[in-house]
Length: 366
Image (tube, rainbow, N blue to C red; front, side, top):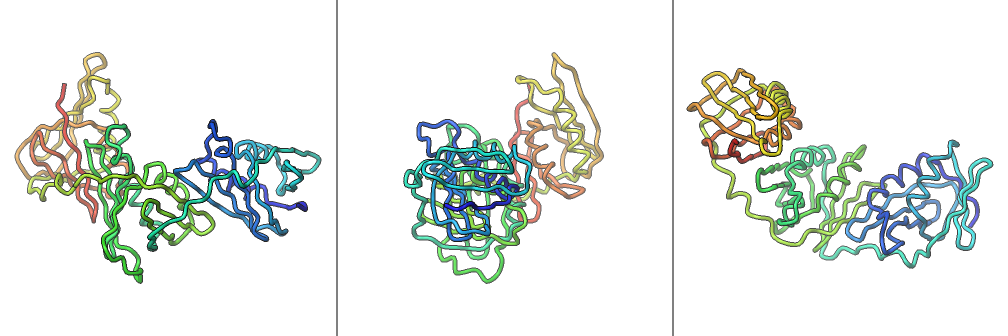
């Protein structure tokens, strides 16, 4: 292998994308490596943990037609310690030589044949997604994913594709977020409705990779999905099982609702949350004719109370909620004012907004 000059910053950017997947400590050393594969004047870099695989690539001025694996963390750490704009890479026997000015590193390599075979999607279908819309949909749903082990299917994002609509839904059993948006025009025929559960980690890593692209491609397989972001690709295994029928828990629109300034409500809940203790997590919301009284009492810490002007249609009511459930949704909305629907002191609070529905269950106050 001749010396290949590579832009150091570009190489660092690529390896940082892949580092989120690489397994640091594993009984399979190859899973802590990056597969480097030369394809003429293009170098592909791949990292996998067997469930999630990310591939990215850079252009070079010289040709590389060899493949090998090298420790991702060590390679990245070395590059960060250099300061020059370019570095030289050279492969000799079982070592990768990394040269920069008067400094040189020699890293052990592993045969590319030991790297796991990349997933091959079966029964696939490809659709296009608008990047900004997908980022918004993830932003509106990511906080209500289940984080325990009891409900495995709820640890991911439910994606539903039908006709020209994409819907994403999450639920942690205490709250639910679901959003639907139109797909860009001129899509291939979807045929039957597609629904699949994408693991939380895959969706959140995808969200980090969504940057300058106008559109990305989503290829749906029988047990995997493939996101093509241009110079980077992400492949993930899907979660097996059936997502609960969440439509059953969404009540019809209520006539009882209140309109409130989003930022004032958010800031008040943040202040109330300062007095949260393990056995005193709830915040009291008292709906009056023209105001909402937000209060919090924690015996060992103290009390908090604030009145906020609202427009309220309905009977006076007292509710108890985990403040974080309301903070999470208010943080990601952009509207100056929001409208919450109420159904009773032991019923959920519901927010509907342009194809988005958020539902939070109340809690009994201590």
